[in-house]
Every structure is written in C-alpha cells, then in structure tokens.
Image 1 (cartoon, rainbow, N blue to C red):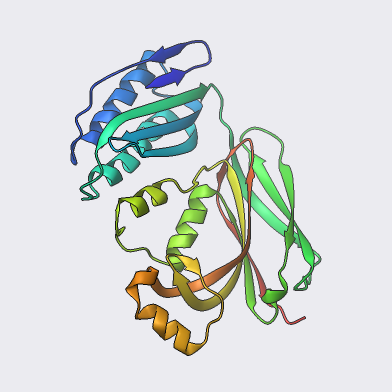
Image 2: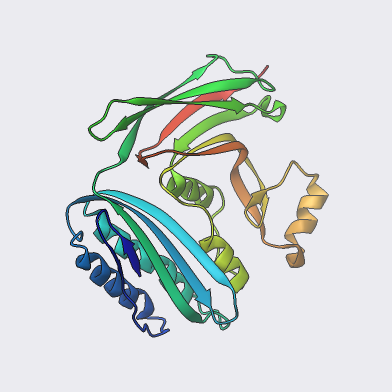
Length: 274
C-alpha cells in the first residue's frame, strides 16, 4: 500500500493470506494502518484510490475510484475490500491472488459537486439532429458551475420514447444492471471483465435511452430482429447469454470533472415523432 499525502508519502508491505473469507478484510486492515500513518483516517479529505490485483496465472485486474468528504478515508478502505471479496468468493477454481497493490493519493480538501439541474436546447429535439445539454453542478463551498455537452440524437430514435439520464460512474453501472440483471459469471474471464468496468464517480455520465423492451447478448442490446432469429439465439447457448432487456442505450458520454459527482437527473423527452 502506498499513500501519497499532502506533505508525506508512506508505504506499507504485508503478507495477506489468499482466503475466500479473510483476504478482503485483511487488506482493509492494512490500508487502515497505512492511512493512520499519515494521520488522515478521520476528517475532510479527497482520495484517488487505484487497486491492482495480480493473479498467479499472469492476469491482472485494475480498479479505481474516488472519494471525498467527511471520513472519505474510511469509505475508501472499505470499498477496496469489495472487488477483492468478489474475486476470492467467486468460486472460480482458476482465480488465485498473487499480489495486491493499492495506491492512494490524498488531498486535504473536499471536492464534491451535486447535480442540481439539467436543461436542453432546442426544447423540442429532433431525431438525426444534435441537441445541447446544460448541466448545473453545485460544488462544496464554491460557486456553481455549468457543464455543456453536445448530444447527437440518432435517427433511430424516431418514434421511440426517449430519456436522458445524468449521473456518475457508479450510477451508470446501476442503470446497466437495471436494464439487464446479470447472473453469476460463467467463468473467471467474465468475472474479471465485470470488475474492470469503469466506475469512477468523478466521471459525469450522460446516457440517451430508448425506453423500449428488447433482447441483449451478454448485456449488449441487439437491434430489432425477426422472431425466428430471436428464438434461435435464445435456444443456442453457445452464442452467449441472451435475455430480455428493458431500455436501449442510443448514445453515451463520459466526461471527467474535478469533483466527485453526487445525485442523478432524468429528462423525459417523450416520444420523438419527427
């Protein structure tokens, strides 16, 4: 564990047993110890946490997240245990931890911004034409800021009920799980792929969603298909996991901002007819 603080840097090395029950908790204890050494366990702070897990077969998982506010260091140490527990509790026989590296950068301030409002121009968007989205952020103890994003509305949105969702990296993962609840990973490759998904909460994420039912292959929405093709996909396990999905992402934007983003906004554009 390496902790890079405002005025000092410290490193702590420890042997942690590769155990389904204890690996995550023991790693959290090591992180607590490293953070305590720079006297930032409590209070106001902002942290950038980067976790690297090396498996014995050479594969690697990298996971990173940001935290800011009161007791952010506590939340950071707790959060690192989650991906480790997913690995050690997975039941995958080819997943064995070789080493765990945690890099933490600490700032002595709070960098949090609440999503307060979102507006769009033109007021009546048209499929096949761009629209401008204005998002108002309210940072902690700082003037409000406005982020402007240009969104293309694909021509395929014509005739569909459209929503715009605005949130952070964790929000985007939650939205995806709501559209297509994922079963237990089939193998370790699928497990590692899920853990590698971007989730940083200083990412401002905007998604243009067609609120229509459909079919997904391994979580990815498929275009409209004839009934015979849909039936064949659902009856052929070799092609991947096929299942119903509620909502199709037509476009998404991920923008890094200098704040941990809090809150969500939803804009309902209704059915776009022209």
